[in-house]
Image (cartoon, rainbow, N blue to C red; front, side, top):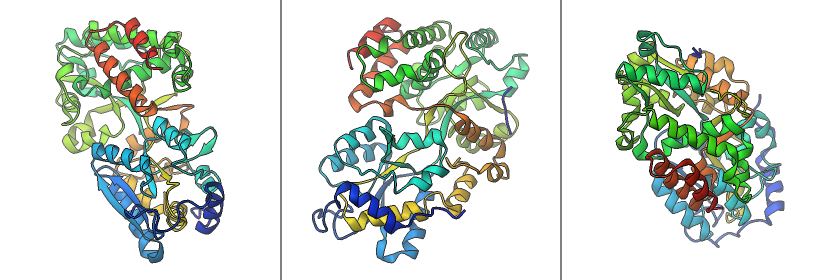
Length: 437
């Protein structure tokens, strides 16, 4: 069972701005953006999401505003889907907020290629030295930094119901073959082996990502990101999709996974109510377990890494999930707005107060050297475990639906759903995805 228990930045806002403005030609001049988006009059702003860790980010910006009334950063909150729609329009029209929030990946590459955000490599060098390398790379394009993480790190882990494993005398699987054996044993005992919210589709990504990485390492998907011809024909993709078909056909996910949605945490509930033995989920599920079933979480919740594949080329320490949301600095913002944004990044982002607030909320800051703080927290066992995954990961793969450009991401979700539902074969999945390159 794998269940476990400085002065911030030396760079000043002024010197940071000197670097950025020399790189971006000074940005849009005051008055050129009349919509109050951070491009006019030196006013900086940020759009953030609701819920999660975002109140912590709001508090951080509020502290900056109290000390810097002449460089205030206004904040507006959006629901997830509403934000994605609005930011796409705003960036394309040159009216983005000063601090542009994204998930990195294909969206960030698109921003960089179209000169929507500025190179902040030198301006954030001290921060880069403090971040977990596996997370910091999510804000880099061609070796340069265009974004910095802003919230918590969320690797995908395999949660399980310890009581069910103990009751049926089973060991937590460490290999794919063991996973199949455990699945069969639970089915014989009328227990659903693995909870899956197939109706939401995106939870299925966790399975294809880990199986692909364990089989072929990160190089397989990197070829897709690089746009190489027939990149989806890499043997790792066919191996992963064949294993998904095997899991589906052998009943590992049961018969009703296609009607289970993640929105109301129905999949997580299957585990803490004893109806399912395992679930593959982002580390944020831990907070959901604590909220919805505190006694179960305290006494019966276990977690472990994704199983290995015999003969697989991927490093077992590789992880997938959400390294963190990231903030870029808009190239359309005025000099004053950019200066305020970089000042906040330099003086407030992941300072002592933010780190303390995040840990208290059950989240893991992607910052090096916080082991002692995590170990003293109420959620020490899990936070320390989750932090260790991100700290030691040779590669941290962003969720594929965020890593890919929007059009390819939607085709991926469509074909993945059809694969899980048995409507297409593994080879058809590969052929269909090659057609999107």
